[in-house]
Length: 180
Image (tube, rainbow, N blue to C red; front, side, top):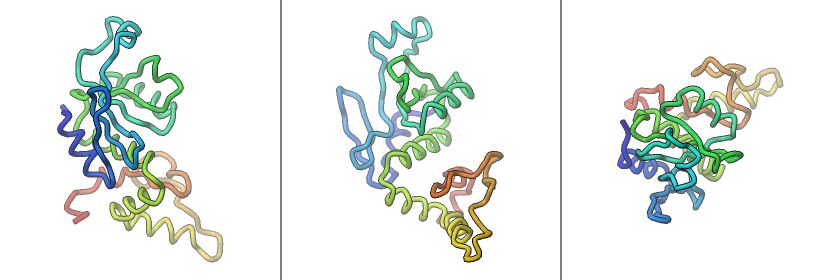
């Protein structure tokens, strides 16, 4: 469902992102830190995967940790997979023609946030969802010490993001007209 044009458009829409080509494959970086890239399978990768080796466009995406990678793969193995080369490395492989554009946008943005310098990521989040950041900073700054960050994230069924971080889920759930 997604294409390399979608990847390029999404990646280059994020602040201070550049595109480069390495070994004939496109890569997108923020401040020289790779966050999404074209990842064709090599001979060893194909041997490791055997008959399961896809012959389709594959995107490599940086994730927070091995737990996130495992969760993505378990949640949707028709879209996400890995190879032994990435064992112990926080990255997941994505069958580009199986991922929806909105899911690709969320995945690429989260990868960008992981790799972007902290100040740049905070500025991006402040522009993207200022009400959420303002609410969190007011709660953390309560003078009586009784208030703190919300215990539950209003945009998901799970716990709030760790202190000092903000989930981008509100960006995906919002009507694009709300941010204009």
